[in-house]
Length: 445
Image 1 (tube, rainbow, N blue to C red):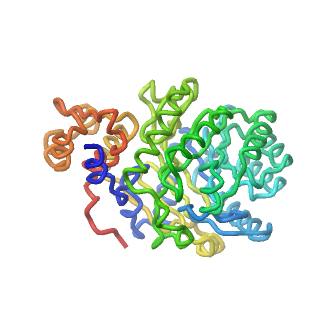
Image 2: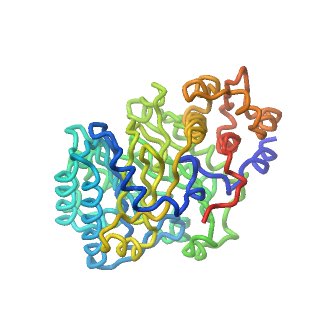
């Protein structure tokens, strides 16, 4: 039965619903001028989050699906930082006063490709343009293969409070197959150094579904990670899309596990982490009981954003850098993906927004339902509809996929309250898709 459901509902084309509507529905109709208008409408006293994308790595991992490029020296990084400072200034010019900031996330790519002195200068400039709260959470993604003691000291001086460390797998065979060779000893030494420098909140990223991975190797990697006791782990399934990401053509497709094997790997990792005392968060995150993510889930305020699961309650996310996605009150905006195009916009003195989406009232309703399903594995449709001023009956009647999901025993529906059975959380995206009105529509240009 499980195999039947996997083959029926584990559709790789389904969105991950980190945002709704999803990026394929973004349109070039929303551009720099629209973004300027939306920024000017932001409430001046309401805290915002910042996301800064750093599009460089010292080594390219073949599995990676994010926009990033290889660099061996600091020249392209420094050129990018100059453009980033100009973009930050352009954003700051649109608002009447320095916006309060409660959360910052440096993603990539590899943010630690930035030289230590340049990173400190960037943080100083951000603090000059925005009003950081004293308790602001500043997080950064790290590739431990290139992190020096000087960089760790810099992160401490810059006020970094959380580090997300790319691990993926500790199996040497798997590592070589995806061009990511990284020893357990190296990872452990970086974790130790971070903690010694006061950066005590540590996240790990693990992957399943990689070439040559087995249930045994996934469990072994999870146990190795557990020995370092990270506060959180994100356990993602590798998405093989070589037609979109050319670097993935280096991967041996014949060594990739099928849907059933992937599900077995995911379940085995989950069992290992939960048995060690971690709480399962939504679809693919795990956290210690005292971590902010677990506390947010327990309080019913877990959020879903373009970064995944979050305890961040900000309504606004300002995205900076190539490909960065922002969430403003009126809708979503995304910067130019190519670094060269991003530079051209900024050098011309305009925001780098290339496309976006203007939210309707119905979009906000559906987004709220999808977010609760993805976060809580349940949603009170009548209550959410009432909060948004909608009648739940037409909405439920139009969700054609719900009936099939109920017949297959994946969901229980009682007076509009939808609950996904725990053993079927692996197909939660298929449940969320029941409320995606744009799913089967051709993408916008």
